[in-house]
Amino acid sequence: MFGDWPYGPDLFAAAPLLIDSINWTRRCVSWLHVGDIHSGSQPCTGAGLVPPPTTSDPGYNQAVFDRFAQFKDPFVYTPGDNEWTDCHSPRSSGAARR
Image (cartoon, rainbow, N blue to C red; front, side, top):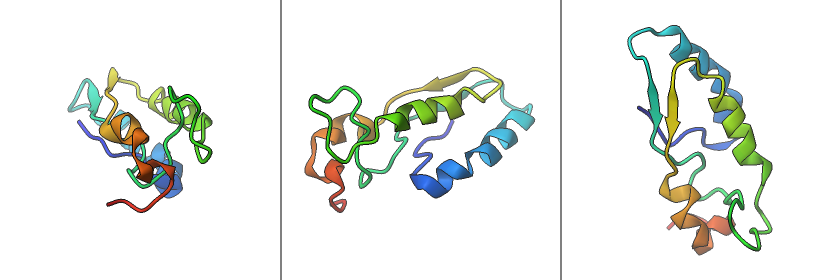
């Protein structure tokens, strides 16, 4: 089980290292991501928001999904507060986290 990942471009770029490491281990047979695919200070992706925030990156969710699809074992993702409830707060527009 893990979450709060991938936060930002550096961790997203390093995702193959984590995914390969997880795919290599045979101690677990399934994985659970407990949400927060971006930090609360990163702009929301705009998914489900009408109109989407002007700072949103609609392709981000798909890019994260494509990374998640690389896991060999069953993988479950649950949305975290950063990608749902926090998207309605002022900080989702890129403002500093309170």
